[in-house]
Image (cartoon, rainbow, N blue to C red; front, side, top):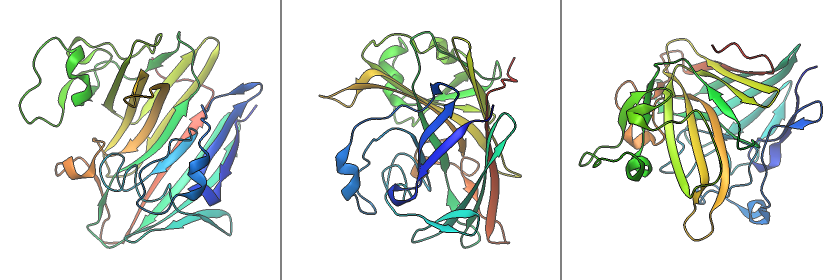
Length: 270
């Protein structure tokens, strides 16, 4: 049985449903203020899967595509931003869904992209990624590491599944923490009871990762809630402003970058 996908083109091209049989994978949050957003507004978290490009953190907050209306063109869905145009073509596969992307911009344009998927997961859910994959932790993890954060460091690096001793492959109950990480490699699989959701991104010549946002009631300050993000990425950081030479995607001389996101119910991670 394939995955059924529903998108909302008027509200940033957001994936609002990802269903397999009786299982809805996407977490959603009531956020009526989303209806009135304009480009470069602060992010309004409605859940689902957001298309975050050309950055996730930083400016514009969660990128420049989520706050704009998309249009349907032939069999694709497009968004036009100040510095780029991105087109997405969705198709079902025997065991899931595939999204093909094309971003066009001036050669040399650097960007991050994330399929910012907030998943509706139980406390027993497990995230599998290649063991030993380089994994970056970001400053919100500092209180959980048991040693001082290096002065001025935008991230520290260990290996999956427990970078620098902080185990990240299990989500667990709410504990008042929120941690962001980026795992190199571009593929992962979520196990939740008998259900499986595999996610992978492929792109020639671009850095591939999976971002993890494990918010167990630690964010935002004052009105925290639980949200768990598993996010295939082009890039190796959350904020484009912090990207080193090899940490972001780059538009080549052709003026376009192509990549493919696959989501399926068959897990191939060990």
